[in-house]
Length: 282
Image (cartoon, rainbow, N blue to C red; front, side, top):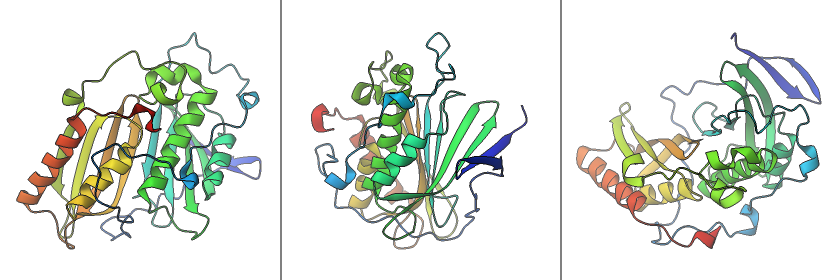
C-alpha cells in the first residue's frame, strides 16, 4: 500500500510529509538531565507533576467499529524518539488501523506540562501511525527529563488501553492499566539482550531489549548514570510485551572502551534479570 499522511491542525486535514524528521547525523545533542544513582528498589513515579492522567471519558471512543473485539488484535507500539528532531521529542503510537486522532491523548500530554507543537497521522501497510512532536511548556524545548519521558509513555499506554481495552492482554502494561493482564509470560532471562557498538569518534550506541514494565525507562537511565556514563540521546520503543531502547552514550566525551562496555552490560543485565517487587508502586 502506498504511504500517505495527513496533518491534524485546527480541526482540518491536509496532505503533509509527516512530523519534521530532521536528520540528526553525527550532530551532538543536548544530554538528558542526569539522575541520582539508581536505588535498589523500583522507582516510584509519585511526584504530583508526573501523575499519569487517565482518559477523560469513554464517550470519546471512536464509533467507526474499527476496534471490534472479533478481529485479531494488532501489536500495540509506542515509540519515544529523541534523535529525529533536535528541538522536539517525537512520539509515535500504532495499533493497527484502530486508532483515531488521539485528541484525548494530546489533552493528557498537555496536562503533563507539555505542548503538542505538531501532530500527524501516517497510513501504510502496517496501519495508522499517530505522531506527535512535543516540547516542554516551560522551556519550549524537547524533554530532557527521563521521569517525564516515562510519564509520557505511561500516559499514552494508559489512554490506549482506556479506549481500546481489547489490547490489554497484548501489552505488559495491561497488568497495571488494563482490564486483562497478558496471557503470555515473558521469560526475562531469554528476553533480555544488551549490545554496545562504536558510534563514531565521540559516542557509543547502547541497545537494550527486555520485558517491559512501568518505570523501566527511568531505571535504565539511572543505572547508566550510576557509573558516570552520559546519555546524549536515544529512542525507547514499547512493542507488545517488550521494551527496546537505543541510547547514544559517552564517557567524558568519548566512546566507551571495552572494559567500561562490559561494566555497563553487566550492571544492566543484573538489574533487568533480578526479581522486581513493590507492584503497588504505581
